[in-house]
Image 1: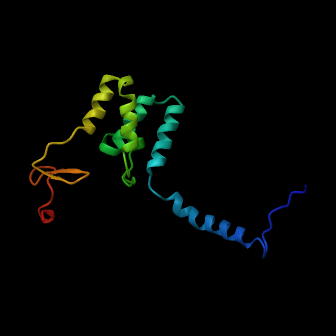
Image 2: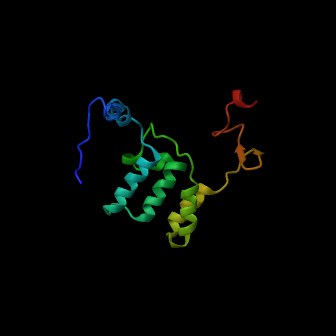
Image 3: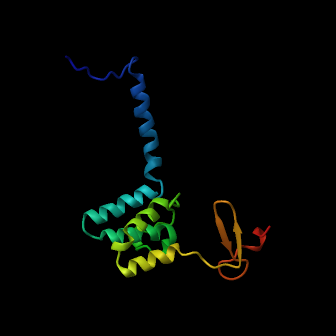
Length: 144
């Protein structure tokens, strides 16, 4: 059986299109803000190199979602893309809760604890708690 080299001519013009598309979008991709997967990859890298423990990595992932200002400066990003869902993260915490140190468990439980608020709006799937006065209040123009 003889292997053929890919053709970059009239018959193989699709390959040129793919190559041009990759080159055209490379600069845009390199300039994108830190995504969930990019952050998770960075945390995994820190774990693998022994710079942080598994537990510290879990805490960093919770901080990215619930308290980005508490992240170490090297992992903080002003233009980070918000996390779409923390369901997998919460599931991992629930599964490993017994093996976590008391301080880390308390911090994560604090992030997950329901907040008290002046008002609540309950739907079939969600509970929204909000304030109309004080530091975390909804702006007056949005109170309709």
